[in-house]
Amino acid sequence: MSSDEKSWILDTLQELIAINSVNPANDGPGEKEKCDYLERLIKSWGFKVKRYSPKDDKGIERPSLIVRVAGKDQSKTVWIIAHVDTVAPGDLSRWDSNPFELRVEEIDDDVKVYGRGVNDNGVGIMSCLLLLRRIKNDSLVPNYNLAIAFFADEEAGSRYGMYWILENTDEFKKGDFAIVPDAGNEAGDWVEIAEKGILWMKIIVEGKQAHSSMPHLGKNAHLHSMQFNHALYERLHEKFSDENELFEPSWSTFQPTKKELNVEGINTIPGNDVVYWDARVLPRYTIEEVLEEIKAFSRAYAHLQGVNIQVETVMAEGASSVNPESWIVKSLQTSVSNVLGIKPRLIGIGGGTFAGILRKRGIESVVWSVQNEKSAHQVNEWELMSSYLKTANVFHNLFF
Ligand SMILES: [Zn+2]
Image 1 (cartoon, rainbow, N blue to C red):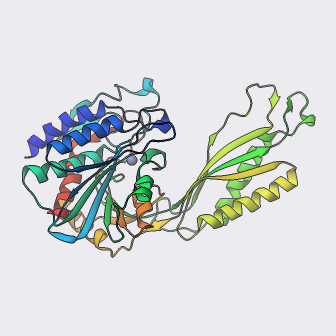
Image 2 (tube, rainbow, N blue to C red):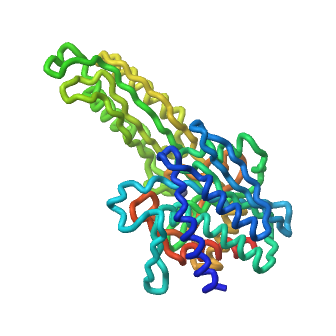
Image 3 (cartoon, rainbow, N blue to C red):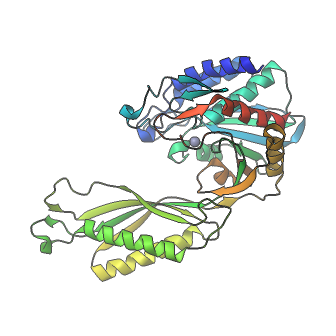
């Protein structure tokens, strides 16, 4: 079975990677063509595939697929959820090969594959496909109901994927369990059971535009923005300084990230300056109290300096966690031990997976897979053949 699976993995990956599924938020074509491929393949194995195809605000079809396999014990449903979209390839000159053409490298005892999406979320997609293929080839019946999902739009906030499904369908039921193979490491020795809260903000500082030779006639929004954002950075780290060793890093993080163009000309004092922040907050703080602090701090600064500061929330998702004694945590730990011979430890991360969204809706969820943890979203994205197989083998152990 194993060598047959290896050549099947390479053939299938080659076709999958050749289909560009970059998220439209990164100016890509989206998930349609890759979902067409997956749907055809899975249907050819005799499974029913449910397809949801909402259109986004650009009019692009954003399909998600769900495949259900009835289990011996119908009282439990366990989801495995992968995502079909990818981030953009980035600077093509820094890739050693075409990101949309699978490159294969034989290494000691393994095969290394390169291409956009081989890791994120190729590990999720390929492990789910392997599981379905084994079910079909060996007429397996899972111990519990199995629900496999291939979702759209994970890389840009899941509005047309996970959130759309939750808002417009009743696919997910309270009491279901979920595994999200969208993060992990090469050893497969941790299971993620908690996520920090996420707050994305847009901070607009308004001053007064002027010629840069006459700064006294204006109010330099860029200068105030730098001063304000730096002071805010210090303030937030000081105020929300608790640590929690479950997480890496163990503290809350507050980072100014994206910067909008303020003026075209070097000789213009900017009247407006826009900076975005990405904050990842430990569960012991609420997103609301962090926002409250930011707003109070900005009011005080604006008042003192005679500028106007607006704080807008771009995205907010509270922290989440699942009980370490939960059935799904224990079962997955046991399967990892059975297959890989290691006892995985429990960890928390900076947040942002499907598991965080589902936990808050009564679906106990864990994040686990075997994958390299260095190459997601990078140029020369790579993965090992063994990662797909080990991830699938652990799922196999859990379900059969
Ligand atoms: Zn991902």
